[in-house]
Image (cartoon, rainbow, N blue to C red; front, top):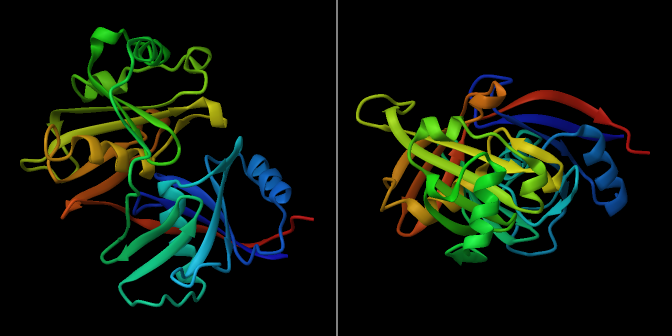
Amino acid sequence: MLRFSQVDVFSAAPLLGNPVAVVHGADALSDEQMARFARWTNLSETTFLLAPSSSEADYRLWIFTPGGELPFAGHPTLGSAHAWLEHGGASRAPDQVVQQCGAGLVVVRRRERLAFAGPPLLRSGPVDPATLDRAAAAVGLQAGDVVEAAWIDNGPGWLGLLLRDADAVRACRLDAGLAGGLMIGVVGVGPGPGPGGGADREVEVRAFCPSIGVPEDPVTGSLNAGIASWLAGSRLPLSYVATQGRALGRRGQVHVDVVDGVVWVGGDTLTTVRGEVDLG
């Protein structure tokens, strides 16, 4: 039996964010055992905490979707760091945790809420017209509906579509057959106020990723990191709060800050399930 946590990420209230299943002390598990459990949980991601192999890391993390392994993902990073700390993990530095994963070392900052430093983009730049046409059609749009498009891949493979406003994002409808292997993130700004009210503009995000067994991810850290790398400082401010998940009955809030060129993506984390799991 191994210790198990299920953590709600990007929400201060339970059941409104994106859950991640976290298995502690998973060093003896095989890749197949991990993949089988991830398929069984049927969450967008399931993670496994192991001892680090890097002297610079506090722990090592394997991240699985129902469809396979990911080198990096955002909400599993925050949720797993939360679970590791909650179960007595002692980081080398008091103000941060260093996670080792397939994408390398990821720093998680410990302040009012956990925030990870977005990894560098593995692929960036413009999207060719044929791929843009297919991506737009896959979410119920035409290429002319897209204000701007770019590759914003920091591990999972994201392709970003900027739409005219938040209402256009909420109106998207996925055609999984057209999406094929594409990981499509859509973002729109305004017209309403953001979660903080005041002068904040509404930033709405959705993530479509049927190729990994997740038609729409409720709240997505890696996508929001890619969007900030792409648009913060131009079409988006350097500090803002994005909302995601309303189409799925969630109220995720993703806190984004770009400081000295580093994209920090943060969110509230809350353990909703604690116990043990038997993986056979």
